[in-house]
Image (cartoon, rainbow, N blue to C red; front, side, top):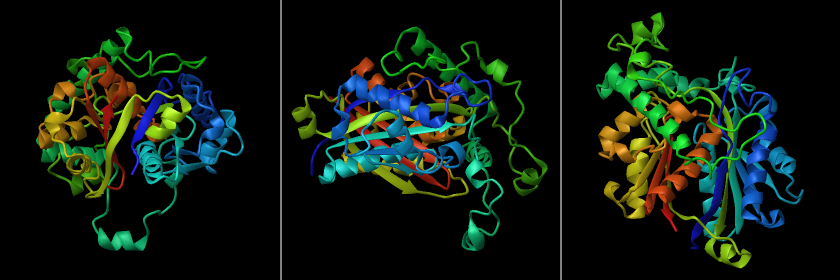
Length: 388
């Protein structure tokens, strides 16, 4: 099977996902198209040689419905002959798009693919695709008679199981903001972000955030019916130690090593190994632990071989539980800040993390990087890349 390489990756700045946010006036198709167009312009690739555009989106309803990636590819100016498809693996949708692209290239079915993702949470609010519908069906209800829970409750259950104090969650969140603010001030995001007229920098970072400030926030998911079901919880998860809602897009150009050489493209990294797992849908967000083990086993590497980690900060408790389970060095995890500060535009986050991971590896001179995403339903993707 062929070597799969990443030629380049680019993302938009991340806007607040609410009316009045910096990207709230941009249609998600146009937001997605901006990332795809920027990728084509940066690499100089002939768009006519792209075999497919595989994009991720979670809220596939309204302005993000009807195979939104196809319309983004056309809006970006790609030839009508270039196909496109939209995938949904919840928060890991664009990381899964990267995996599908890599699998196609590795097998020989593709030579050149764009993997991408978008989410405009200001225009397609979280949960819109499931609002007012029983999307689980009777079979799931029979298998889980006590009922499943929203992600915020899963984050609380994780904090309880791993004995993560409220102070620890808030400290982690404040450090994420500090790292992100530092990365911007030192110009580390300049090479990965393609500004838009309405927004040039990530909008959710709060440089002055401290654990003391975060300690004043109320628990976000505490409610009487959850207190009755889970009396053991003492409610530690807040808006401050969770990721916000956001708008953004990202895109990655993936080719075979042979195609890159033939087209005069200079790869930045090799897609070394990838994995996806299922896990307990009640805890829901712990799949990143077995996913990390699985991808390292496939790569023939250990946790100490990895120079940089990008672990999606959907909730601080998720990353802290992962750290406890894996023994990874916290200094190497989300070195430029994570989703708590930068934001979490759901369908775009997988490609965004990969874009940042490449920047971190190049800045620090590391060889291997590992990215993993927790996903609704008890799923997780993990990817190992090797800097070239």
